[in-house]
Image (cartoon, rainbow, N blue to C red):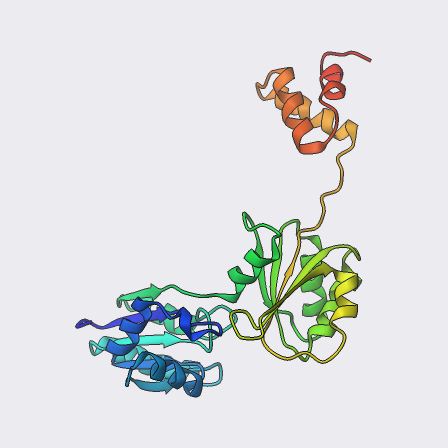
Length: 274
């Protein structure tokens, strides 16, 4: 680490046993660590045997600290950026520092690692081919209402963070904007001693999580169930495929798979049978 470089590091979301050898080496050899919470980061540094200097970089001082961080990199120092847990910038500060370092043409890299977003999504069983991350819901007002409407329309899983003090309110508002039977997973204290995963419907979740809750919470809302396609719509889609060059048989098969409408019904419509 002789040349100036910014190392954007993911840190354990709870279990310090998740520290990778690469993260350990980076923390031990860095010149300075910029951390969202210096107390929590000091515990991490002690765990890996690092005596690296720590400076705070949180939402309230991010602009001023970014200037200092960039200056350190320009002076040839190895600089580490971490948040409380997980990856910086994921509902945490750090984006301005990264943009500025990149804008100055300075070197930067990422040390990947644990993230509650993907961990909760994986445990939910809702699938991860496509998903949306919404972070924390706005506390109130038009922006909260708009975000809830966007989430309600999503046909892919949605991952959210929730404060333990606002979990019940968030679930109630999600219930009011979604179908009662939309699936939801509540992941609490992931990787920690009291890790808990609950999966059910939104209606059930409002009852289950109405009381006092402690710890870090990640919600995963299953994708909205697609509206069934009508036979007329399926036939129109198949005709469009035929017009694009597909054979009638191929078009009927493809649309039947996606729509649930009988392949025979679609094919007969394409050849003019009644």
